[in-house]
Length: 408
Image 1 (cartoon, rainbow, N blue to C red):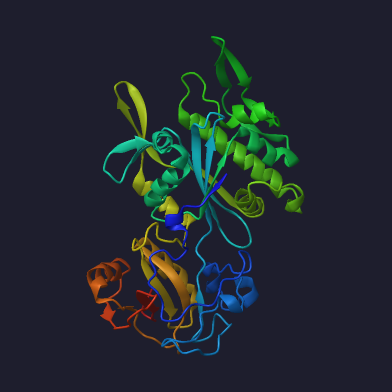
Image 2 (spheres, rainbow, N blue to C red; image 1 turned 135 degrees about the vertical axis):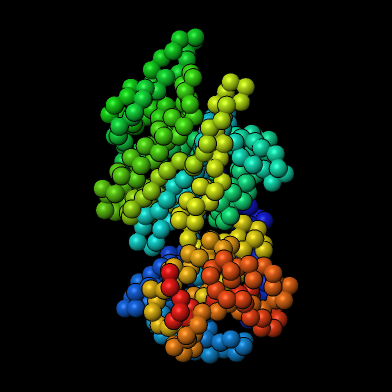
């Protein structure tokens, strides 16, 4: 099942209507611009994943001018395609939530990060109350997937493109072409059947191929077992799948034509370097029971790393920022970009000034109503007080220019 939340379907959440439209988008693969690639002066345009449809016209006043294709050239500008993301929700045959995981892609060359959330993780709701993820999912009924996605996007301060719901049977179908998955299991997996505790998987080297084994590896929570143990098993299972994909040259031969969004991510995870980890939490005891409480600050730090070019989770949650390099040293982009994202900016355009040789970094904004917010933003990224320029209808809210005085 694939779910798209209509309230967050736009990849440019919060953008005002522009004076002129940007060039139309290309397909998913050909239109990727991973801005980190801009740090190499000699990087070829094709390596950036750019084509004519990605380029922002060389114009600041709405008039059409020639498009520039050299990312190191003065006046170059390109629309930034945000980091691709996906939410995977695993459920039982009864529809109960088992876990959630957020995936992000690293680059067009492959790789990415997968962040796991246990179902009993206690999180703060927008109302100020607290609830486990499983309860949020269950209380929303048929809209559980969307409710969970909305909550997690707020937690990571970034939109999630789409979500998929998957059970043990579907997981087995996905991994079947490279089964059996072989990896090390730290603890026995047990369950209670007819009042008797039985061992489904023994600790040590395991070989997973059947639906029942997939269920034991990723879904079963044994008597008295902490949910973090199950999450650790899930991490091991998914890592084993990605490791198996790494061994196959033509991944299309071992990725079935189901769960298209997840398969697309799996192909990337089976190609480049992957990072799989559990969402950070603290433990507290309530009425004699150990409760896992989400650590929002630690989760946010991981999100900043795994989603370097985010989209606002709701309109206005992030300032829409254009970044211009004014010195021609593109190695300065990456540290500035990180500061901007950390300060709740959404980078929508990357480029260069019309001429290099800019001495001083600056912040310019185009809506007087945003003054207080932009002043705080400029301070957060370590730049002087912003300058206001009246530009009605601009789809860009802030322009950050990197000058020679900027150091990381």
